[in-house]
Length: 281
Image 1 (tube, rainbow, N blue to C red):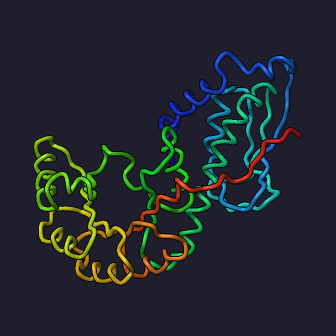
Image 2 (cartoon, rainbow, N blue to C red; image 1 turned 60 degrees about the horizontal axis):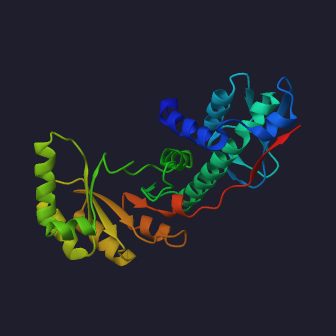
Image 3 (cartoon, helix red, strand yellow; image 1 turned 120 degrees about the horizontal axis):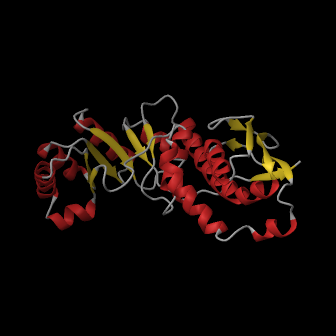
């Protein structure tokens, strides 16, 4: 469960972007004292996400809006179901409508895609991770949706974990040099951050293991056969993560290689919004 304080800045900015001086369409034709009711209609099967966020949006737009949930975040839903009903000032319902829908449609799509991947690897020890390939400004929502769908979050940003990828390694002069510089940096700055290092081939895996002092090795664009060999060589000394172009057709094969994690950028960068609508009744 995410804390309200984490998403308040987003809600405030999004409402300012949309409303500014006022919802003139509604103000022009609807009496200020008019009350209304609406319900969120599910228009395709999937995993619902964003109900808690919708509650907070309605609350911020107008505390007089009352919301009644029929389902909860993470529930599997069918086309035709009602997620919740809202009742309150009609102008306020219309003002909040688009932001609620925009958020819930994308979050539900991400949660659904995550759950689909989780079902494919069911029975393995592997956990599915998201990446930083998110929409600028709404990362908190997209990573929240991944968790609702049963996945886990990788690092949230550049500040909460050390991740040495190919460019870091090349700019630093090699794997050994990069890891040594990171350890010194963390010590000098009194930082306690986990370290992950990307490997592009088996030789790099061997060098990372030899240097040590890290937490996770990312096996980037390894074939399943190469992944099996790497996992056997690492032998539990460090966490392992597969990454790079893994799809729903190949994810089970990689999970069965014994990796601890599989990171998938497509969870957040390549989803089609779930079809939802807020209808007056």
